[in-house]
Image (cartoon, rainbow, N blue to C red; front, side, top):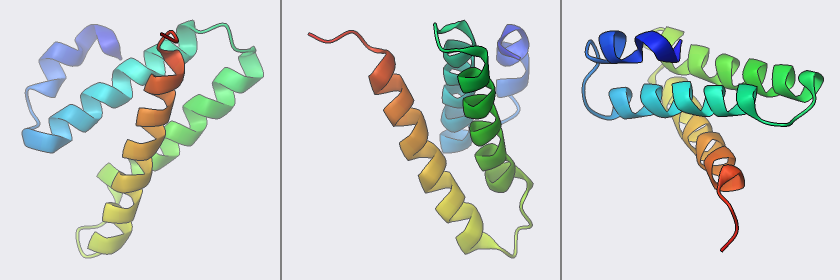
Length: 87
């Protein structure tokens, strides 16, 4: 996924591009982490489900997509913060 991010991210604009980029690189971080394989799979599945709600939901279900966007953003921020070394 991350190998072709530059090519495919250019099709999105604004906050969607940022969200998708963060999603891709957090997913890569999860896969490269020292978590057990079952923890990695569970985390990847959870993030993929949230991204499917954000990008795959019908346009007329705006509030559900917005709620999914906020939940995904929060989840990505928590995973990024957990991956940073403590100061």
